[in-house]
Length: 93
Image 1 (spheres, helix red, strand yellow):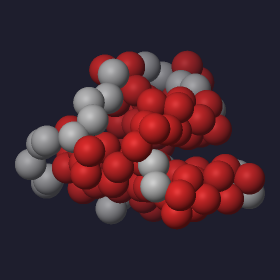
Image 2: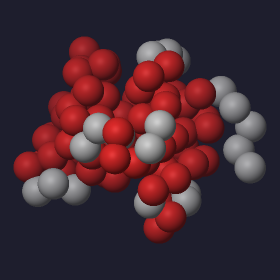
Image 3: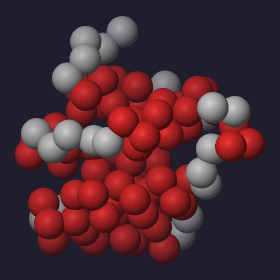
Image 4: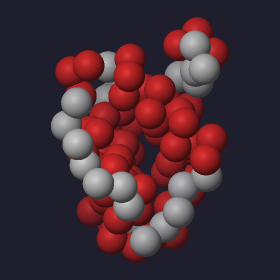
């Protein structure tokens, strides 16, 4: 998938929140929505993926592809790869 075909960060963030909404604590929900409100999406991704790990929630393949594509585009968020690997049950590199 080319970067021009990738959904916007905001779309990915909202889709992630919708996917785990019922599992978010009040604090996680507040963190996520404050970050969404200021267009700061990496904290949303981290928050949601920590919930995915904790609750052992599976992510749809399309969502995984979107997150991997985002990671490829944003080199400054390499630490995010470790969190994503944990969420997917993969060994981190």
